Image (tube, rainbow, N blue to C red):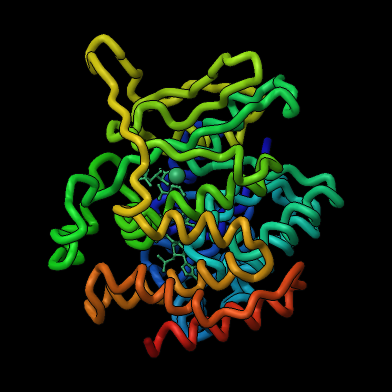
Length: 379
Ligand SMILES: NC(=O)C1=CN([C@@H]2O[C@H](COP(=O)(O)OP(=O)(O)OC[C@H]3O[C@@H](n4cnc5c(N)ncnc54)[C@H](OP(=O)(O)O)[C@@H]3O)[C@@H](O)[C@H]2O)C=CC1
Ligand SMILES: CC(=O)[C@@H](O)[C@H](O)COP(=O)(O)O
Ligand SMILES: [Mn+2]
């Protein structure tokens, strides 16, 4: 029986992780669940999966639900609660599915406690990739990618020698506005932006997909997960999201991973690696699809992707600043405070003022993150 804890159990990845766990009740057991504010759903999950420890975003919410929890369950709250669920207990693998760099401390705590990570929370690697990967290597902890593109690359690299990689290519759907001109982007609404053409995901990542920030975060995530220089990480527009990403080797062979868009496949693979189990995902019929299309990435149309790549190459706290500025700008857009195009302007303004710190420690990262959030909130 493999014990699993899920950070962000009430979100898009969290609920799909629990779907996967529920499909294999003889093999998986839930040890801990951490949610934010959706206590109604969390209580339902507690009744169904009977975890040993749970956490919610605040002490007030914890006080509200305490009497509704079955006895014997440890209840925690806040960032400390996330850390307790991540590092306490006897889970073998922790799925990190909270949204944003709030997941950093708990991911580090889980690794420190020797737990393998099913990594969905890409912001953690963007904000502090060097700290997370260095600690994972030191502790002998595996980072199993859940992000669809990175799971694809991970699968393509099975049994391969990393030195034989010529380059990897991350595919991008193009998001909700992929056929819009820059001019047309001026008046788009939150509701339009939230309609992703291929994937049903949380609000923040759906907006990131529309700005192409998501692909920028994923390039940085790939750099840290696979130890590749930025020059070997490419992006290609592929509107159908059928080829999830691919690797080109030095003999010119390309290995790609394909499938209908369904996150339960990469989530399950992260939990069962190196085995493959039955999945409810709809089988892909290439004959039915008929054709797949591709377009060169246009960095003028999607400037945020270029900005993210430049931050990755700069290293230091540049990616921390990029991520924090984006998190604040997206939250403001979702609250209807700023127009869509202001998101990338805020990121650019923050980066313009940013003084980069090389090889930052955790304290420097946290202080950069805090400073940038305060600045981005006022711009
Ligand atoms: N959705 C997808 O298909 C994919 C997502 N990812 C990545 O996975 C991560 C999660 O995305 P997604 O599931 O879409 O996001 P959602 O917004 O759907 O879910 C976020 C989860 O995090 C919880 N949460 C938010 N803030 C806190 C906090 N302060 N403390 C504890 N829990 C908190 C939320 O709780 P609550 O709702 O209870 O407030 C919720 O359970 C992101 O990093 C995203 O980039 C990567 C690839 C695909
Ligand atoms: C499902 C997943 O992994 C998302 O990150 C997805 O890739 C978003 O799609 P695009 O960023 O390609 O629009
Ligand atoms: Mn992805």
